[in-house]
Length: 108
Image (tube, rainbow, N blue to C red; front, side):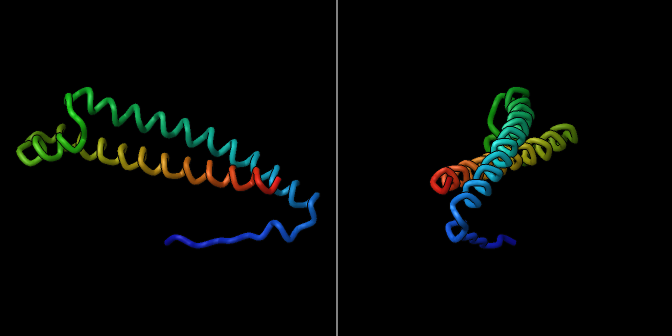
């Protein structure tokens, strides 16, 4: 469940607004660093399956998965699929935090 959250930092005195913006910006930089590392790890996991099977996830799911009786291949598909979902989510979060950092730069 997504919540819509609006904060009016502009109503704060200049000094307080800058203080809040600096602290939020510092947190965002740290979060971007963590998310960047998590993205790299998830991409490495997803890419290892692409290399192993010589195709991307969608091609594997369309061509090979319906016919497989191999439990290792099916297990790999599940891990690959979950890794790709993580990649997509980390990319989305990174973009959200970058957008927020730009907004804070305007306030600071």
